Image (cartoon, rainbow, N blue to C red):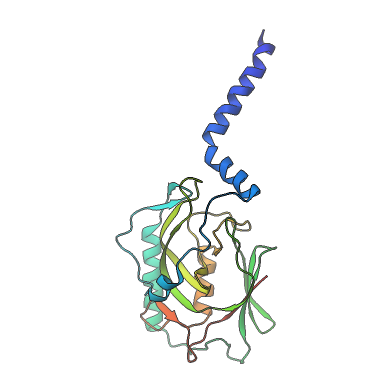
Amino acid sequence: MLHRLVPLLLLIIAIVYIALNFQSIKRTVAYKLHISGDTTTSCCNADVVAKSNGSFDEDAATAIFNNKIIDYPKTSLAYAQSQALAQSLNSDKVVLGTTNAEGEEKWIDVSLDEQKVRAWEGNKLIMEFPISSGLWSPTPKGEFRIWHKTRSQTMSGGSKEMGTYYNLPNVPNNMFFYKGYAIHGAYWHNNFGHPMSHGCVNAPLASAAQIFDWAGPVVPPGQNSAHSSAENPGTRVVVH
Protein backbone atom coordinates (compact mmCIF):
# COMPACT_ATOMS: atom_id res chain seq x y z
CA MET A 1 0.00 0.00 0.00
CA LEU A 2 2.80 2.39 0.93
CA HIS A 3 4.56 1.99 -2.41
CA ARG A 4 1.39 3.26 -4.10
CA LEU A 5 1.53 6.46 -2.05
CA VAL A 6 5.14 7.23 -2.94
CA PRO A 7 4.37 8.88 -6.33
CA LEU A 8 1.64 10.99 -4.69
CA LEU A 9 3.99 12.05 -1.90
CA LEU A 10 6.69 12.98 -4.43
CA LEU A 11 4.17 15.03 -6.39
CA ILE A 12 3.08 16.87 -3.25
CA ILE A 13 6.71 17.59 -2.34
CA ALA A 14 7.38 18.89 -5.85
CA ILE A 15 4.34 21.18 -5.74
CA VAL A 16 5.34 22.54 -2.33
CA TYR A 17 8.90 23.15 -3.52
CA ILE A 18 7.75 25.00 -6.63
CA ALA A 19 5.32 27.10 -4.59
CA LEU A 20 8.00 28.08 -2.07
CA ASN A 21 10.57 28.86 -4.76
CA PHE A 22 8.25 30.25 -7.44
CA GLN A 23 9.94 33.65 -7.81
CA SER A 24 13.41 32.14 -7.93
CA ILE A 25 12.41 29.54 -10.54
CA LYS A 26 10.56 32.18 -12.54
CA ARG A 27 13.63 34.45 -12.52
CA THR A 28 15.94 31.62 -13.57
CA VAL A 29 13.71 30.44 -16.44
CA ALA A 30 13.14 34.01 -17.66
CA TYR A 31 16.88 34.70 -17.59
CA LYS A 32 17.68 31.52 -19.57
CA LEU A 33 15.05 32.39 -22.18
CA HIS A 34 15.99 36.10 -22.27
CA ILE A 35 12.40 37.11 -21.46
CA SER A 36 12.84 38.53 -17.97
CA GLY A 37 10.85 41.68 -18.64
CA ASP A 38 13.30 43.46 -16.35
CA THR A 39 14.37 46.60 -18.21
CA THR A 40 16.86 47.89 -15.64
CA THR A 41 20.26 48.16 -17.33
CA SER A 42 22.42 49.72 -14.61
CA CYS A 43 22.24 50.47 -10.92
CA CYS A 44 21.78 54.22 -11.27
CA ASN A 45 20.80 57.10 -13.50
CA ALA A 46 23.97 58.89 -14.63
CA ASP A 47 22.39 62.35 -14.27
CA VAL A 48 21.40 61.57 -10.68
CA VAL A 49 24.88 60.22 -9.98
CA ALA A 50 26.54 63.38 -11.30
CA LYS A 51 24.59 65.46 -8.76
CA SER A 52 25.17 63.10 -5.84
CA ASN A 53 27.39 64.26 -2.98
CA GLY A 54 27.76 60.76 -1.54
CA SER A 55 26.38 61.64 1.88
CA PHE A 56 25.03 58.89 4.12
CA ASP A 57 21.21 58.71 4.24
CA GLU A 58 20.38 58.54 7.94
CA ASP A 59 16.65 58.30 7.23
CA ALA A 60 16.89 55.04 5.30
CA ALA A 61 15.71 52.15 7.45
CA THR A 62 14.98 49.28 5.04
CA ALA A 63 16.78 47.46 2.24
CA ILE A 64 15.07 45.30 -0.39
CA PHE A 65 16.73 42.80 -2.73
CA ASN A 66 14.85 40.50 -5.12
CA ASN A 67 11.52 41.66 -3.65
CA LYS A 68 12.54 40.69 -0.10
CA ILE A 69 13.43 42.84 2.88
CA ILE A 70 16.98 41.90 3.83
CA ASP A 71 19.38 42.52 6.67
CA TYR A 72 20.53 46.12 6.33
CA PRO A 73 23.74 46.87 8.29
CA LYS A 74 22.96 50.56 8.71
CA THR A 75 25.07 51.05 11.83
CA SER A 76 28.21 49.43 10.44
CA LEU A 77 27.89 51.25 7.10
CA ALA A 78 27.48 54.60 8.86
CA TYR A 79 30.48 53.87 11.09
CA ALA A 80 32.64 52.88 8.11
CA GLN A 81 31.82 56.13 6.32
CA SER A 82 32.50 58.25 9.40
CA GLN A 83 35.86 56.52 9.83
CA ALA A 84 36.73 57.14 6.18
CA LEU A 85 35.87 60.82 6.56
CA ALA A 86 37.96 61.14 9.71
CA GLN A 87 40.88 59.39 8.03
CA SER A 88 40.68 61.72 5.02
CA LEU A 89 40.78 64.78 7.27
CA ASN A 90 43.80 63.49 9.18
CA SER A 91 45.67 62.05 6.23
CA ASP A 92 48.97 63.59 5.18
CA LYS A 93 49.59 61.26 2.24
CA VAL A 94 50.42 62.76 -1.12
CA VAL A 95 47.62 62.81 -3.69
CA LEU A 96 48.92 60.60 -6.47
CA GLY A 97 45.99 60.68 -8.89
CA THR A 98 46.21 57.91 -11.51
CA THR A 99 49.88 57.02 -10.92
CA ASN A 100 51.87 55.69 -7.99
CA ALA A 101 54.98 57.21 -6.41
CA GLU A 102 57.16 55.72 -9.18
CA GLY A 103 54.97 57.22 -11.89
CA GLU A 104 53.49 53.86 -12.89
CA GLU A 105 49.89 53.96 -14.09
CA LYS A 106 47.15 52.66 -11.83
CA TRP A 107 44.53 50.65 -13.69
CA ILE A 108 41.72 48.23 -12.91
CA ASP A 109 41.15 44.97 -14.78
CA VAL A 110 37.62 43.49 -14.61
CA SER A 111 37.48 39.91 -15.89
CA LEU A 112 33.88 38.86 -16.53
CA ASP A 113 34.91 35.28 -17.36
CA GLU A 114 36.82 34.89 -14.11
CA GLN A 115 34.47 37.14 -12.10
CA LYS A 116 37.49 38.92 -10.63
CA VAL A 117 38.88 42.42 -10.30
CA ARG A 118 42.60 43.04 -10.29
CA ALA A 119 44.14 46.42 -9.48
CA TRP A 120 47.53 47.15 -11.00
CA GLU A 121 50.29 49.73 -10.76
CA GLY A 122 52.09 49.22 -14.04
CA ASN A 123 52.79 45.47 -14.09
CA LYS A 124 52.60 45.11 -10.30
CA LEU A 125 49.47 43.45 -8.91
CA ILE A 126 48.19 45.49 -5.94
CA MET A 127 44.97 43.68 -5.07
CA GLU A 128 42.68 40.96 -6.41
CA PHE A 129 39.19 39.92 -5.32
CA PRO A 130 36.06 38.13 -6.57
CA ILE A 131 33.14 40.12 -7.93
CA SER A 132 29.59 39.67 -9.19
CA SER A 133 28.93 41.30 -12.55
CA GLY A 134 25.74 41.64 -14.59
CA LEU A 135 23.20 38.82 -14.56
CA TRP A 136 19.94 40.52 -15.56
CA SER A 137 21.75 43.06 -17.73
CA PRO A 138 25.32 42.67 -19.02
CA THR A 139 28.22 44.63 -17.66
CA PRO A 140 29.53 46.79 -20.54
CA LYS A 141 32.86 45.73 -22.01
CA GLY A 142 35.53 48.15 -23.08
CA GLU A 143 38.04 50.66 -21.74
CA PHE A 144 36.71 53.40 -19.48
CA ARG A 145 37.76 55.81 -16.76
CA ILE A 146 36.15 56.40 -13.40
CA TRP A 147 34.18 59.60 -13.87
CA HIS A 148 32.49 59.94 -10.46
CA LYS A 149 32.91 58.44 -6.99
CA THR A 150 30.52 58.47 -4.03
CA ARG A 151 30.96 57.04 -0.57
CA SER A 152 27.22 56.24 -0.37
CA GLN A 153 24.56 55.85 -3.04
CA THR A 154 20.93 54.70 -3.10
CA MET A 155 20.28 52.16 -5.84
CA SER A 156 16.86 50.99 -6.98
CA GLY A 157 15.36 49.20 -9.96
CA GLY A 158 14.43 45.75 -11.18
CA SER A 159 10.96 44.27 -11.65
CA LYS A 160 8.48 43.46 -8.89
CA GLU A 161 6.62 41.15 -11.28
CA MET A 162 9.77 39.12 -11.95
CA GLY A 163 10.93 39.23 -8.36
CA THR A 164 14.07 41.24 -9.19
CA TYR A 165 13.05 44.52 -7.55
CA TYR A 166 15.68 46.14 -5.34
CA ASN A 167 15.88 49.30 -3.26
CA LEU A 168 19.24 49.48 -1.54
CA PRO A 169 20.17 52.55 0.51
CA ASN A 170 23.72 53.60 1.31
CA VAL A 171 25.51 51.31 -1.11
CA PRO A 172 29.15 51.94 -0.17
CA ASN A 173 32.25 52.97 -2.13
CA ASN A 174 30.90 53.54 -5.62
CA MET A 175 33.22 54.09 -8.59
CA PHE A 176 31.19 54.94 -11.70
CA PHE A 177 33.18 54.05 -14.79
CA TYR A 178 30.51 54.18 -17.53
CA LYS A 179 27.22 56.09 -17.24
CA GLY A 180 25.34 54.52 -14.29
CA TYR A 181 27.58 51.45 -14.07
CA ALA A 182 29.89 51.23 -11.06
CA ILE A 183 32.24 49.05 -9.11
CA HIS A 184 30.82 49.14 -5.58
CA GLY A 185 30.47 47.30 -2.31
CA ALA A 186 27.53 44.92 -1.84
CA TYR A 187 26.01 44.09 1.55
CA TRP A 188 22.93 42.20 0.26
CA HIS A 189 24.64 39.00 -0.91
CA ASN A 190 27.82 37.02 -0.44
CA ASN A 191 27.75 35.11 -3.72
CA PHE A 192 30.86 36.73 -5.17
CA GLY A 193 32.38 34.85 -8.06
CA HIS A 194 28.99 34.56 -9.79
CA PRO A 195 26.96 37.17 -11.76
CA MET A 196 24.29 38.76 -9.57
CA SER A 197 23.72 42.36 -10.66
CA HIS A 198 21.90 44.52 -13.19
CA GLY A 199 25.20 45.44 -14.83
CA CYS A 200 27.30 46.90 -12.04
CA VAL A 201 30.33 45.17 -10.54
CA ASN A 202 29.50 44.04 -6.98
CA ALA A 203 32.50 43.66 -4.66
CA PRO A 204 33.00 42.48 -1.06
CA LEU A 205 32.72 45.42 1.34
CA ALA A 206 36.34 45.42 2.52
CA SER A 207 37.69 45.08 -1.04
CA ALA A 208 35.45 47.88 -2.33
CA ALA A 209 36.64 50.19 0.45
CA GLN A 210 40.28 49.42 -0.30
CA ILE A 211 40.09 50.00 -4.05
CA PHE A 212 37.91 53.11 -3.57
CA ASP A 213 40.69 54.77 -1.57
CA TRP A 214 43.35 53.62 -4.05
CA ALA A 215 41.66 54.71 -7.30
CA GLY A 216 41.19 58.17 -8.79
CA PRO A 217 39.61 60.62 -8.76
CA VAL A 218 40.76 61.36 -5.22
CA VAL A 219 37.95 62.32 -2.85
CA PRO A 220 38.91 65.62 -1.14
CA PRO A 221 39.40 65.52 2.65
CA GLY A 222 36.13 65.70 4.57
CA GLN A 223 33.98 65.11 1.48
CA ASN A 224 31.98 62.12 0.23
CA SER A 225 32.25 62.43 -3.53
CA ALA A 226 34.60 63.40 -6.34
CA HIS A 227 34.10 64.13 -10.01
CA SER A 228 36.98 63.47 -12.38
CA SER A 229 38.77 66.41 -13.96
CA ALA A 230 42.06 67.19 -15.68
CA GLU A 231 43.53 68.02 -12.26
CA ASN A 232 41.93 64.99 -10.56
CA PRO A 233 41.62 62.25 -13.22
CA GLY A 234 39.85 58.95 -12.91
CA THR A 235 41.61 55.59 -12.94
CA ARG A 236 41.43 53.54 -16.14
CA VAL A 237 39.07 50.54 -16.03
CA VAL A 238 39.30 47.70 -18.55
CA VAL A 239 36.29 45.35 -18.69
CA HIS A 240 36.57 42.17 -20.75
